[in-house]
Image (tube, rainbow, N blue to C red; front, side, top):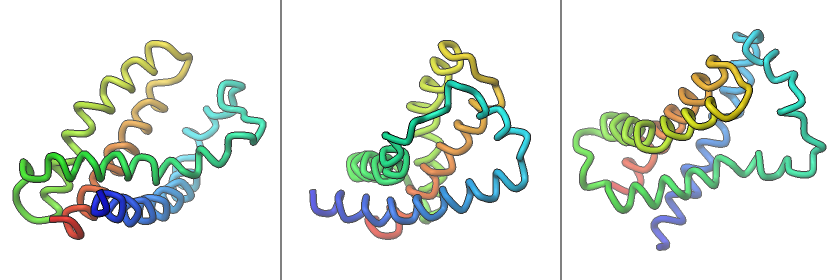
Length: 135
């Protein structure tokens, strides 16, 4: 359990930094996509902002547990294992969630695709980090 928590915490810090750096770059280079967020659906009163900022740590803890449980199935170097880990996560978890989200909410396909890509990249980065610190 200690290994899962420690690995998840390290992966969470890495994901936090990469996520917010990536968000800054994405807004800078794809501003049209972020104009779609000017929608009452995405307006918050600020009371749940902490939950948004904790996302990197929540996902990293879940992925750390998943890694500990199934790491023996991934072979090769850290990058290859991270890519395979991210692909498995994207197919098993992200694809169904993005499907139901798109079908249930009034959002664009570009939003859903950006969330899918974002989740895939998070899982790959977490997989690489976890493969290095918890082989």
